[in-house]
Length: 183
Image 1 (cartoon, rainbow, N blue to C red):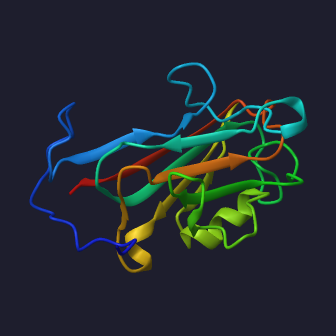
Image 2 (image 1 turned 135 degrees about the horizontal axis):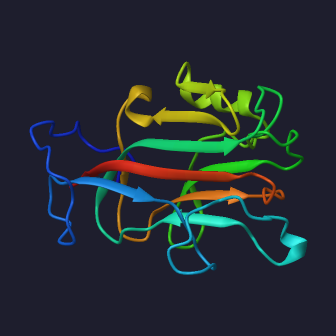
């Protein structure tokens, strides 16, 4: 089965409901696999030696096409050389699609984890924007998968996975959402 789906049906604008009907849109936060129910803030300590693997996933249990991943980092004083407003990470963040056994289907970072804000540009092109102001600043990241060719088909057991490999507990907030359509 191909990892990539057919072109999207752009005639549907309904937001997905609990029934997850074909043609409905998906807006789903990436959630911590072993943390508290519903935990979607990724500013955790992902250092494995401290007992937290830092794995966040979307596993809908249905066939759906992943079209876009939106990410946001709220923090003070972000620059291109930092991750959010903290220093450059040592081990970084992996963004992958994996199968039910954890086998990598697609590595969006090409084996090179994201360690600083500037690294997001390799995924997004020009869709990484840093907004500064009074107090907290915001790094917006929009990774549009279909701009690389097509949406990515995820079937039951296939997951969008973020692996946090450093201590992000000093970030104010780091969240990500997958968007797509049910097939």
